[in-house]
Image (cartoon, rainbow, N blue to C red; front, side, top):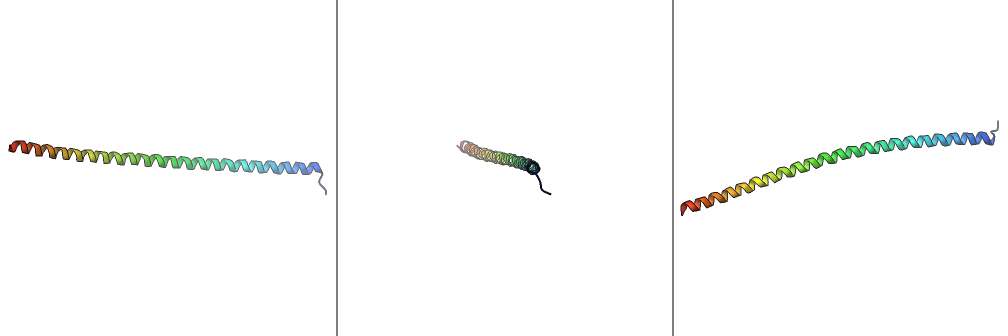
Length: 85
């Protein structure tokens, strides 16, 4: 049985539509996966950024405490010198 040109063209169009649909579905899946990965990475960056801010906040408090301790030592030493005079 021989196919006519119209039958062949119809079959080719059918195959092209199928391939186009498959490609669109694959592109949607890829985009969804990429967006999910982006969101995951965004949450990771946000979490780590907060940890960094918290870490340096603690370090800043430690430095302030050390400065205050040094200031107290200086004031006590001055007080002692004044008392001894």
